[in-house]
Image (cartoon, rainbow, N blue to C red):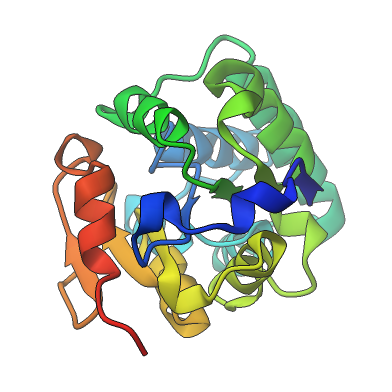
Length: 233
């Protein structure tokens, strides 16, 4: 976890019930979910295996250990988890070195949150080395706090990453708005007690109490996020 959170950032967003916004990275802010699948296909091809496209929905949005473990078991590849993790991260880091495309509406949303001084965190299942490379493109100044998947004991779908982000801001989880693109991330945020906006990137996500589902970040702004956190517990 990296943090630049001064005491002043623990206040609410301009007097509203919203205390912080917690954003996923891959598939939510940056268009990289497809990158991960392409890298997995390439690495397993090098190992002599062809991935079934049906497996994509299984591994999307999950922590590296779950995704890699599933693909090793599904293909029967003769490779260990640690070695595969290194290969995937190396290939992905090389891929994003060519540039990272932002999702539609991401730049506007980040600019609006910064303009209104809303405490904002990046909460990802990706490893720190990957997050830092993506931040070079997105702009680390947008985030007072960043949490990587290899910096927590249990990553998504466990609530620990979002609970850690809320605690880092001194915020109540139910007064934090989370933006996620996968069922795995949504499950983590909801288990933490956060309000959630789902912006599905690969597999559909159904609406539910305390959860909004929109087609893209172009439908999300600060007023929308404040509207998720209105009632007082």
